Length: 229
Ligand code: NAP
Image (cartoon, rainbow, N blue to C red):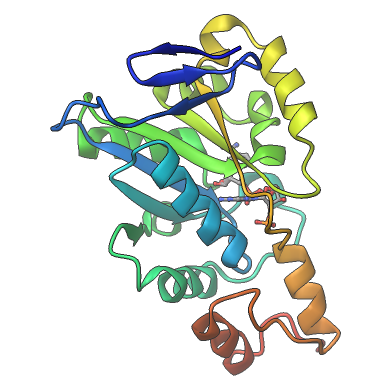
């Protein structure tokens, strides 16, 4: 059974959706879409738009990770390429912006530092929602200064085919009440696209048309990203 308070619907699973109808007009509600985006694809774009609509967010700021903290041992495409593709993919949506904040900050791209900087920029009244994949979010207690991060904003976990919504619900249910209320979910049920699959397709010479925006597809071809050496 769902309960409702101040326009917030709280489901029996503890995950909330917001009607957005009674938010104070002046308060900024900012979605921060964090990811490696290697490459960005339609799954990310649908998730961002879905989060924006469901939670009444004013804007979505895409933040490509400069140095993904948990991928030090994994080869990741140069940050400038990932940033350029994110710009190309989001250019046509007036409510989408892209930030260089994690590219321009030296060292590992800790989310807590990003949210702190954005909080300083937008002021204490701003409501900040960090949006990312459910699998990533369920590791949040291992992230840098997770206690401070958990206090600093709210979180929207994106689930899609292949990510276990049940596992996420069980995880949220295990959280302390104070933490649990900060986590929300956006389901992108029809879009089973993943960056890993796209990279593999390019490596195998298979098409990626309709999985990424055309400008991103052309960029990947032009710069020979993900192709076999
Ligand atoms: P990841 O481990 O590469 O991704 C985990 C899963 O989430 C994948 O299925 C991935 O799909 C999906 N995903 C990632 N970003 C998404 C997004 N914005 N929307 C929808 N699905 C998404 O995760 P990551 O991209 O490296 O990290 C996610 C975010 O968490 C980044 O902003 C990263 O900086 C942050 N993070 C911070 C810390 C820390 O502060 N210590 C540690 C880890 C992660 P795709 O591969 O298709 O994207």
